[in-house]
Image (tube, rainbow, N blue to C red; front, side, top):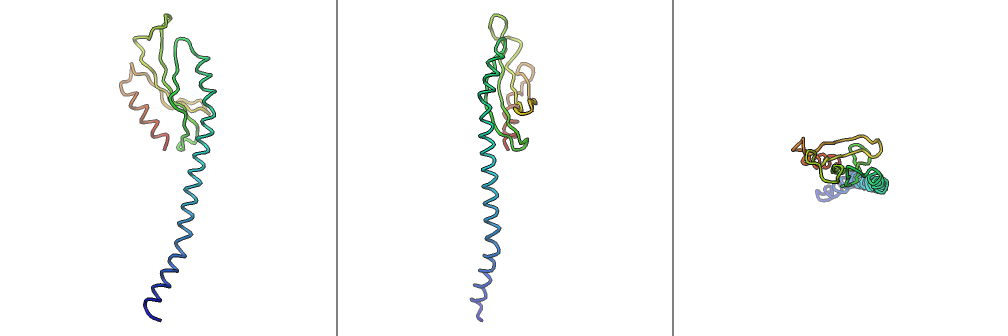
Length: 135
């Protein structure tokens, strides 16, 4: 048997051994992607409930929904929103800046909360934490 046939046989054996592993990885990645997509769709279903809750709580504060998203790291649905505060006359309160909140929708746990009047870095932390939670 000459060397070219040996190399050809070796190549086919190697190919046969590697292909199942590659296809398994592709299938696994697609399943993870499909699962995340399904969970994102499930989280989106909470939007109307959250907006209704914000409307019911209207008064001296106004909550603006920023985003509803699925967090793979927490395996939960989260929402992020900003709260603006007003005095009895409906004017923005001078001593209170907007509050930035990230909350777990399912457990009602607050992941991050802070107002810009007392924490100069809250806006940066808010967006940074949101990005971390999406991973």
